[in-house]
Image (cartoon, rainbow, N blue to C red; front, top):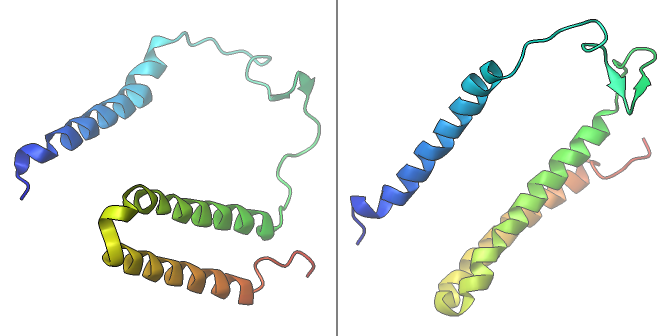
Length: 121
Protein backbone atom coordinates (compact mmCIF):
# COMPACT_ATOMS: atom_id res chain seq x y z
CA UNK A 1 0.00 0.00 0.00
CA UNK A 2 1.16 3.49 -0.68
CA UNK A 3 1.01 6.41 1.68
CA UNK A 4 1.27 10.15 1.29
CA UNK A 5 5.07 10.15 1.62
CA UNK A 6 5.32 8.19 -1.63
CA UNK A 7 3.85 11.16 -3.50
CA UNK A 8 6.28 13.71 -2.04
CA UNK A 9 8.79 13.53 -4.95
CA UNK A 10 5.98 14.06 -7.47
CA UNK A 11 4.64 17.05 -5.54
CA UNK A 12 8.14 18.55 -5.25
CA UNK A 13 8.76 18.07 -8.96
CA UNK A 14 5.44 19.74 -9.78
CA UNK A 15 6.30 22.68 -7.50
CA UNK A 16 9.72 23.10 -9.13
CA UNK A 17 8.18 22.91 -12.63
CA UNK A 18 5.48 25.46 -11.80
CA UNK A 19 8.06 27.72 -10.16
CA UNK A 20 10.28 27.54 -13.24
CA UNK A 21 7.36 28.42 -15.52
CA UNK A 22 6.44 31.38 -13.31
CA UNK A 23 10.06 32.54 -13.30
CA UNK A 24 10.41 32.28 -17.06
CA UNK A 25 7.12 34.03 -17.80
CA UNK A 26 7.24 36.80 -15.20
CA UNK A 27 10.73 37.43 -13.88
CA UNK A 28 12.98 36.71 -16.88
CA UNK A 29 11.46 39.33 -19.25
CA UNK A 30 12.00 42.02 -16.61
CA UNK A 31 15.70 41.24 -16.30
CA UNK A 32 16.69 42.12 -19.89
CA UNK A 33 17.08 45.54 -21.49
CA UNK A 34 14.12 47.17 -23.24
CA UNK A 35 15.65 48.63 -26.37
CA UNK A 36 13.26 49.09 -29.29
CA UNK A 37 13.86 50.58 -32.69
CA UNK A 38 12.32 50.28 -36.14
CA UNK A 39 15.25 48.22 -37.40
CA UNK A 40 15.36 45.94 -34.37
CA UNK A 41 11.64 45.25 -34.40
CA UNK A 42 11.54 44.48 -38.14
CA UNK A 43 10.95 40.89 -39.28
CA UNK A 44 14.00 39.17 -40.77
CA UNK A 45 14.33 35.73 -42.28
CA UNK A 46 17.88 34.36 -42.47
CA UNK A 47 19.30 37.87 -42.67
CA UNK A 48 17.19 38.77 -45.69
CA UNK A 49 14.50 41.40 -45.46
CA UNK A 50 11.06 39.84 -45.77
CA UNK A 51 8.85 40.45 -48.78
CA UNK A 52 5.09 40.25 -49.04
CA UNK A 53 2.54 39.01 -46.57
CA UNK A 54 3.19 35.96 -44.41
CA UNK A 55 -0.54 35.33 -44.02
CA UNK A 56 -1.36 32.90 -46.81
CA UNK A 57 -3.73 29.95 -46.64
CA UNK A 58 -2.16 26.61 -45.80
CA UNK A 59 -3.90 23.33 -46.50
CA UNK A 60 -5.51 21.74 -43.46
CA UNK A 61 -3.90 18.45 -44.51
CA UNK A 62 -0.52 19.69 -43.23
CA UNK A 63 -1.95 20.35 -39.79
CA UNK A 64 -3.88 17.08 -39.81
CA UNK A 65 -0.73 15.16 -40.69
CA UNK A 66 1.18 16.84 -37.88
CA UNK A 67 -1.56 16.12 -35.34
CA UNK A 68 -1.84 12.49 -36.44
CA UNK A 69 1.93 12.08 -36.23
CA UNK A 70 2.00 13.42 -32.68
CA UNK A 71 -1.01 11.30 -31.71
CA UNK A 72 0.43 8.03 -33.02
CA UNK A 73 3.93 8.87 -31.84
CA UNK A 74 2.76 9.47 -28.28
CA UNK A 75 0.76 6.25 -28.33
CA UNK A 76 3.89 4.33 -29.29
CA UNK A 77 5.62 5.74 -26.20
CA UNK A 78 3.11 3.88 -24.03
CA UNK A 79 4.61 0.59 -25.23
CA UNK A 80 7.86 1.30 -23.38
CA UNK A 81 6.62 0.47 -19.85
CA UNK A 82 5.21 -2.80 -21.17
CA UNK A 83 8.48 -3.66 -22.90
CA UNK A 84 10.42 -3.00 -19.70
CA UNK A 85 8.08 -5.00 -17.45
CA UNK A 86 6.66 -7.64 -19.77
CA UNK A 87 8.04 -10.58 -17.73
CA UNK A 88 6.41 -9.32 -14.53
CA UNK A 89 3.06 -8.53 -16.14
CA UNK A 90 2.38 -12.01 -17.56
CA UNK A 91 -1.03 -12.47 -19.21
CA UNK A 92 -2.63 -9.46 -17.53
CA UNK A 93 -0.08 -7.20 -19.19
CA UNK A 94 -0.56 -8.95 -22.52
CA UNK A 95 -4.32 -8.45 -22.35
CA UNK A 96 -3.88 -4.77 -21.46
CA UNK A 97 -1.53 -4.24 -24.41
CA UNK A 98 -3.89 -6.09 -26.75
CA UNK A 99 -6.75 -3.84 -25.66
CA UNK A 100 -4.51 -0.80 -26.15
CA UNK A 101 -3.49 -1.96 -29.61
CA UNK A 102 -7.13 -2.66 -30.49
CA UNK A 103 -8.09 0.89 -29.51
CA UNK A 104 -5.05 2.24 -31.35
CA UNK A 105 -5.94 0.32 -34.50
CA UNK A 106 -9.59 1.38 -34.25
CA UNK A 107 -8.49 5.01 -34.34
CA UNK A 108 -6.05 4.29 -37.16
CA UNK A 109 -8.73 2.56 -39.25
CA UNK A 110 -11.18 5.40 -38.57
CA UNK A 111 -8.67 8.01 -39.73
CA UNK A 112 -7.77 5.87 -42.76
CA UNK A 113 -11.43 5.47 -43.80
CA UNK A 114 -12.00 9.21 -43.42
CA UNK A 115 -9.25 9.73 -46.00
CA UNK A 116 -6.82 11.62 -43.78
CA UNK A 117 -3.84 9.92 -45.43
CA UNK A 118 -4.91 10.77 -49.00
CA UNK A 119 -3.11 13.80 -50.39
CA UNK A 120 -4.72 13.79 -53.82
CA UNK A 121 -8.17 15.36 -53.41
